[in-house]
Image 1 (spheres, rainbow, N blue to C red):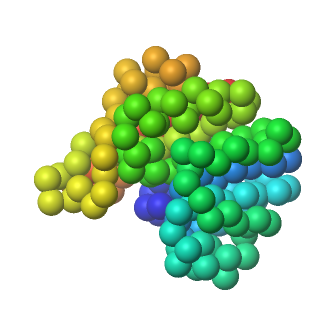
Image 2: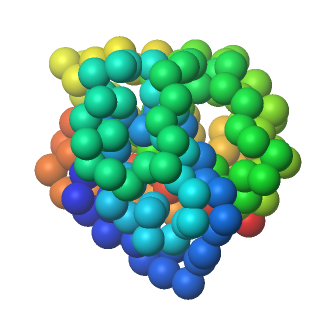
Length: 161
């Protein structure tokens, strides 16, 4: 997660407090530095064991799960969901299915690029627009995110409460 995105997320979460949060596609756990300040129980899910090991060493997550974000089922007590720069790594069809499946979670925050520089594809499978996300019930904010804006365009930040 880019530092400027972490700052924006921190501002959005400023007055929020959750019992159980799920960070889908947690990667190396960078988002945990902000998320753990706003939740009692933080779960991270990622398909990459090496990244999960790094996330575990950071100490922000109460539980780390090795698995596919498309098939993971959050616990019923989950009251917040975070998908930071993960949605674009699965097909659009799988992403829509995932967001519909998890629509029961009351607070959801997503970040995704609005553009891919041709040499910066890095496993990106789908490009999401504000229209895609508003069609699924999210409010969107589109912001530049420093130097990453050159490779990935404006970062879309989508919120559902």
